[in-house]
Length: 204
Image 1 (tube, rainbow, N blue to C red):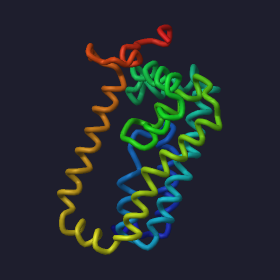
Image 2 (cartoon, helix red, strand yellow):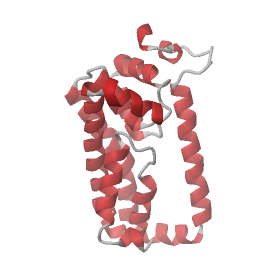
Image 3 (cartoon, helix red, strand yellow):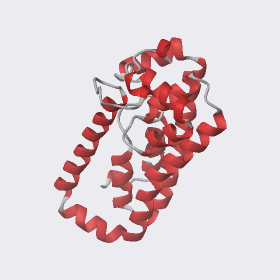
């Protein structure tokens, strides 16, 4: 909590939000939450920093997919364990467009997977940017608004029930990995979505 209130904390928040959208595996949400807890009156400012930095990082991910997929993007997805999910993500973006990017931007589905994939399939940049802004604003600004309005009571509750809150966060992270698995298609024979069965780019 003390570190989250440090004057350099907003810069670290922006940095982690930026790199998480393109290649960093650890989500910035815990840092944003701690900073909002430490200084509830600045919650909207922190949420704005997170949103802007994350969208800029998403543009970097898009550029990696567009210009450097074979030399850098494919390697990065492999390191992150997202290679099998790549053709499925490409299918969803081609089929659903902005909705797929918005979903990834506002849920535990790895945003970096969608940013790199969107660049690779040459998704319209303005459409991508609009969906990214909407999704990232949803997930970050809601946190900022809640802390801005209910900051002090929420801080007291979390100070008292930090262990429970941590457990909930872990559950959400696990849910994110489950979402990745579902996005990857797996062996779900009952799925009606053709994208769920895609295993390679040649099938698109």
